[in-house]
Image 1 (cartoon, rainbow, N blue to C red):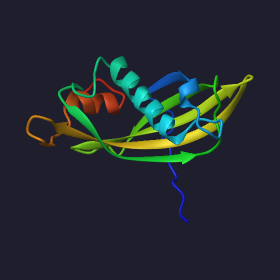
Image 2 (cartoon, one colour):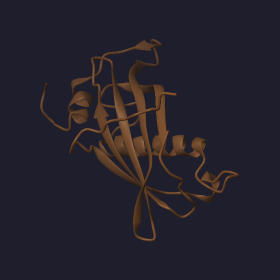
Image 3 (tube, rainbow, N blue to C red):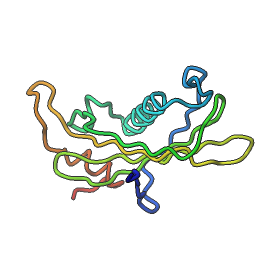
Image 4 (spheres, rainbow, N blue to C red):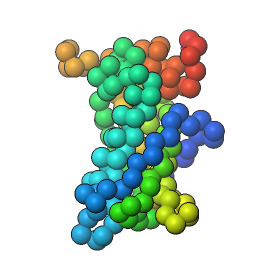
Length: 149
């Protein structure tokens, strides 16, 4: 079986989110549930957008919709662990981009790789119900610059 592999760009972190594992994130196996991890990366994405002064409905002249997601689990996380989520942009095109999430956990002063994830984000016009072109403002943020490309 082929495994999900996500390659992170070197030194291109857009934002780092710190999110604790809540008791409601724990499943019957007594570790972080896969459904909770998807919610956590959504929260991390919202924090990134808020850091830029954006929301998913107003991101530099665009609205965003998630087209796909991939998650590669590396280790378990537990209640009380502090997750560090480093986010990167990749595959930036005229209408879409990928956000990559490197998720690690700190417990007892030891860092552990928990998961690698990718969300495929598409610029979307909710009024017209169709895909739209990425704005220069959003593209610049994703490239980590304020200039025009």
